[in-house]
Image 1: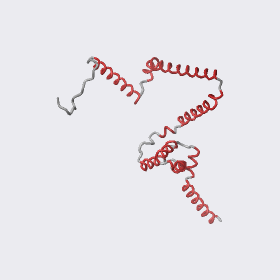
Image 2: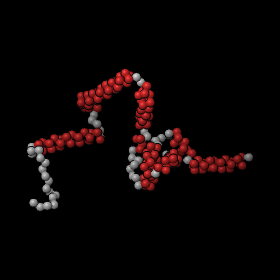
Image 3: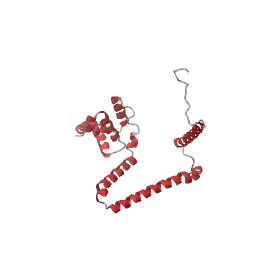
Image 4: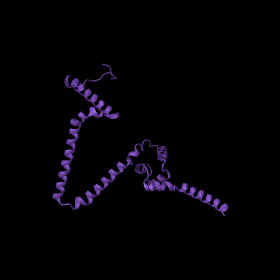
Length: 203
């Protein structure tokens, strides 16, 4: 009995494995459950731009390439000659980004369908004033932090590393060049000096 049951189990496991591979069962499960980052939005917008007839096949395409989305990106860019369209797609599908989008959509629906329609006018005015005051307070606190608090804490915690420090340096140099250019142009009567280095006609 064991000698006949073992080949049957091997055949069944091979058949099941081939079936799951052909139909991308694991990929569909992972895609449906939202396991990992999936470039769904970017792929949808890409097909809306290049081939709208493929929009219905996007779930199947994503499940087929589940776990190997860089390969899908290369295929699409090579096929439609649209390189660089998928740059930064991981940020689009980041959990914090999706959470913000969900909160924004919920807020918009609640405001448009319920608040603006059913809330009394005095309550709307009070909410508008509260929102304005909070926004004003946020701007003031941010300005105080940037101008007063951070210059004191910067020697303790260190300067921003990498791109932030370079950005501040470039901004300072740009301001310096702008001031020098304004002083130079201001002393010459306000007119702009004509550049004749590359003129075709001869004087």
